Figure: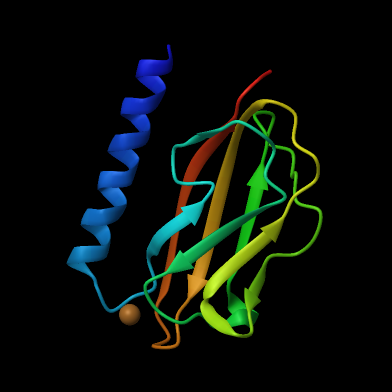
Length: 124
Ligand SMILES: [Cu+2]
């Protein structure tokens, strides 16, 4: 069961890397915390994503949902004013489970990109 989850996560990470290398001029997800496909031991207070290009805050957003599709964000997704490649979504206290992150970005070169990934919070 865990093995299946990890290999799906690895495939998703590889797909993102391939997309980034074939269209390097756009804002693709570089890395995230919690990491794409990872299982974290405790509930994170936020999902933070770093992109390959600076983002336009007004047209960049992300949602985080639980297995039932319900939002678990405690506030709006925000681009960091000090680092416009960083997008952060604050989270409610998360019970163990798998969560989906879906992002839509407009980069400063006016191209839109989108993607999604999952992470899991381990049970105790
Ligand atoms: Cu572009």
